[in-house]
Image 1 (tube, rainbow, N blue to C red):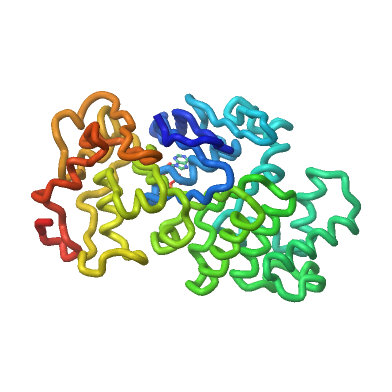
Image 2 (spheres, rainbow, N blue to C red):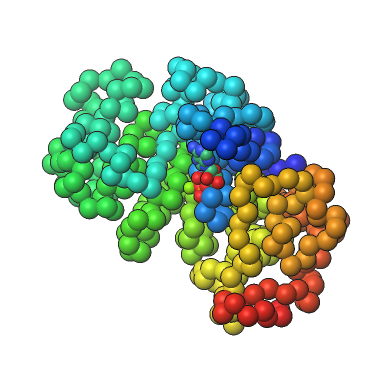
Length: 357
Ligand SMILES: Nc1ncnc2c1ncn2[C@@H]1O[C@H](COP(=O)(O)OP(=O)(O)O)[C@@H](O)[C@H]1O
Ligand SMILES: [Mg+2]
């Protein structure tokens, strides 16, 4: 079961991804399920290495050479037509017709995504030429329009500049222009502002939010920044060790987290709207390596509420409320988490001492 949606633009169903490494095959994504509602703004959060990037790369068939989708499927639905991306060949014409055209991607590292030797306008126009029959002049006009729309000043002149002539924030706008130029239905942004300063981060987020609200785009944003999540997300998905462990609306996940990992994650980072009287805590223990995951709940080794039944078998999603699911056995049938009611659990506070909550 994933979160119930009425009109998902993207449906990720029990997705499994494996990588072949020098140490053998490593199972990185395990039954990742996520329905992304058309027109919504979804944030995917979770500690580094939990599989957020691998998930979105799978969605557009951009896994590294040694990675492979080994189970499940990805359905992309536009114009009333389901397209099974997971069964497309990764170098084929079908996925090339979707990637960059119907699904736009924005990545963190703007310097390595832009070619330093070419003018930025030409690089953005390239995407148009790949997907449409269009004259150079028309393409240039569209790029200038897109630059202006995205707040790049003096767009007419700036299309002829080179990447190094742009600031980090402006380069990120160029990347968004590149992702947006073919008017995609879905925009995926993988930590697009991590390298930028706080003011610029806020401007880029505002831009993404405007594209969602005014241009009707669906946005998937991967971020570490819970402050941003609390401002822009409609929905939040929490990943841990190659799995989605919780998914719900922003209110549900941030105000009433059900999975002990989400609870720990929210207690470990400051964000807007949090209770200032609750001290920040670190999550006890280390994220294990994906290779060590076996049966049961992947968070069991670090969970303050662990029980015998967490250690074996398949842990299913349970519904906490309408549209709010978590993969935890402690969620009982009434949809109230036993763990959020328990008050005797031990967690470590940020000084490393054990505290009682
Ligand atoms: N090409 C690769 N080969 C082997 N393992 C990889 C490869 N790319 C990513 N991984 C592993 O997959 C896991 C998830 O990575 P990633 O999706 O990048 O995490 P994040 O949540 O930080 O985006 C990590 O354990 C990472 O080491
Ligand atoms: Mg990543």
